[in-house]
Structure formats: C-alpha cells, structure tokens
Length: 459
Image 1 (cartoon, helix red, strand yellow):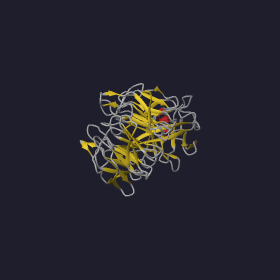
Image 2 (image 1 turned 180 degrees about the horizontal axis):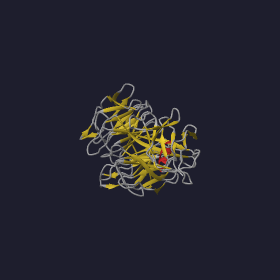
Image 3 (image 1 turned 90 degrees about the vertical axis):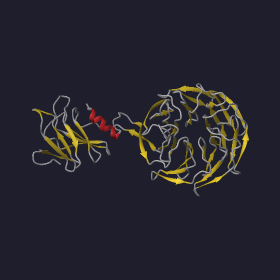
Image 4 (image 1 turned 45 degrees about the vertical axis):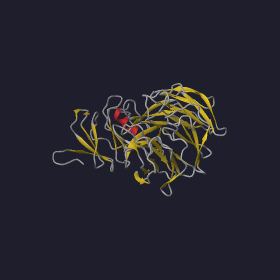
C-alpha cells in the first residue's frame, strides 16, 4: 500500500515503474528577450552553436539582425541587412555563411559571414518572391521554389559563383508550402496556397537535380497551406496541420500518403522540430487565436502526446534546435509583435524498479530531504496498527534503510520540511486518540526530538 503523497514524491526519482521504461520529461523556460519585436523572421543555427535571427515584420519589414548565445542565454546585436525584408528564407551554407534571399517583392540576396560578423552582397534572385522555400541540396546549391509573385518559376543558387539560374519550372504555383530534402537527395514539395485562384493546393511533386526535372507523386489527402513538413528518421515525411487537425505521412519508397492520428486542434503558422529522441515537437500556431500548448509526435506509435505549455502563446515565430537538444522559440505574434524568447527542454528519463518499503504502510508521510533522500514516517499497516517506524530512501542506491522510529506511533499526520533541513511531524491519530504532540527529525543525527512551542521555537 502507498498513499498518494508517497507516489508523487517518488515520481521525482522517476522510480515508480514496475519495469524499466523511457519517459520524456518536458518543460518550458524563459530566456532573455530579443532587442526587437518581430514575426515572419528567420532563425539559423550557426556552426558555432549561436543562433542568427534576421529581419521579419513589425508593421513593416525589418533590417535588424541579432545573435543568441545559448551558453550565456543572452542576445547580441548583429550587423543589419542591406534590405529590410519579411517572408524571406535563410539557409546555412556548407561554408558556414548564411544565405538570406527574397522577401515579399524583394529580389535581393545577401550573405552573412559569422567570422567577420558582416553582410556582403551576392547575386540577386531572377524573380522577386516571398513565402517561398529554400532547400540546401547535397551539391551545396540552394533550390528556391514557389512564393509570390514567382508562381511556378524555380531557381538555383550557386554558392561558388554567387549567381542564380533558372531551372525547370514546377507544375503548380504555390506559396506557404513545404519543401523537404529526402534521403535520396530529391526534394518533395507539398501543399501550399495558390494566390492566383485563392485555393489550397493538394498536389505534391518531386524535384530531381540530376535530371533537372519535376514529377507528380500523388496528392495530399487534405489540401493545406501554412503547415509544417518534417523528415523523420525513417526517411518518411510528416505533414502536420495547416488549418486542419489532420496529419499525414509520405512514404518515399511507395510514393503514397497515409493519414495518422490527428492533432488536438488545427493550427497554422506553427513550428515543427525533430528532436534528438526522434519525436517531433509541434509548438504554437493559431486557430482563431494564438495556441499556447505543444504536442509531441511519436513516429513509432504514430500518436501524439501533450508537450507542455508555452510561456507565451504565439504564432509566426521560429523554432531552432540547439546543440544541447533544447529548442529555442523566438518572436511571433500574440495581440502584438513579440520580442520574447523561451526554451523547450526535453529530457529522456529511464524509470527503473526500486526496492519495496521495508514495512508495508498507508496514511504515512513522505518528505523530500535537502539531501535528495526521501523520509517516510509512521502510517498504518495491513492489520490497521499504527506505526512508529521510519525509513529513508536513497535515490543513489535505490535502497530503503530504517532509521530511529517516531516517539509516538501515528498516522494521518502532517510532515513539514524546515529551512534548517529538519522535518517537523505534527498531529495525526495515535493509539490513544488524536495527537497534539510535535516532534522533529534531524537528518544529520537521524534522531527524533519532541518539541513544544510555548516558550521556544522548534528548529
């Protein structure tokens, strides 16, 4: 028998499972805010482990850039862009430089050199565009697809010569779509919005750089835009939400789509991040109002679980996986443009079986000591006899050991940890009725002392 208090405290040790089981413990924490409010900006993990945040909207496109350093949790001002932009893309090149391209009605592109901390000009896009995608190919080239008003025009950036060239056009115009580099080196483009006839796009097509050609690979089960696409460890692609709660997975081996468990709510303008565990974190977004909770997708069971609540509900933000395995969330919108940032932390904990209490008991107290050990005192046994026995759980060894018993056998009592590190036990039911006595446990000596409050304090 265990009462609820014991079970809750033992959960701190992740040691209440009857068999070993890995669990993902998640939490959200604040970090320092950016210097500027922004949405529809970009955030790029640099080779140094820092994060470069660029541009975005705040009533109008922004030129500003700043760098987040995870080791200090602080932001540092970076050199400003030559052109203000919003709805652009940012791509980390093999050289360590960051290519920023386009933005609504902008054809300019520029490169950020993290060593010099400066921007430099490179060739301009052939066609101005915003709401497009940029995909780094195995060749080191960058494929830019879709966007408004580019339509079906596709172009390729050559980082060696710093120039853009047109390649074969796509079959369908689209913005706010996804473009995923498959394990084959081909690029899967899915869904989006057709600005020319104001409709959702259901078609999907694949670009093959080796043949400079596109081919259709069926349609999404549900046409959608402003969704997310994530390459899973299996090589499949997870397409999530986009105004609908439905979720589907693309299998590149048989080139078919299948529906999996839906999200709790449909959301748009959210983020999707593949975690080191292989799970996918869906965070924020909006569905008539900003969404303040996250969900985790398990590709093994193809199911979703709750991923905790963001400190600030938001959409049109960014999510960047840090080298630590944490996820940095920046900016976005919630009744106004946001500068705030927060960190998602997910820790895999393996629950192991532990030894049973030396004495079966219920209606006892369970108190976490400053040492990290757990003090269990009193209670009632299976024969309904009140107990004075006390034992301590050592989380390092997973073993219970008996210590000096209570002065008075009792159950249903209160136990309170004191700032001194001692534990005060008061009241409850004893063998002769309700108890008014109070006693104090000293972890240093593992002894109990009866105390009173008429003329002196306890501990």
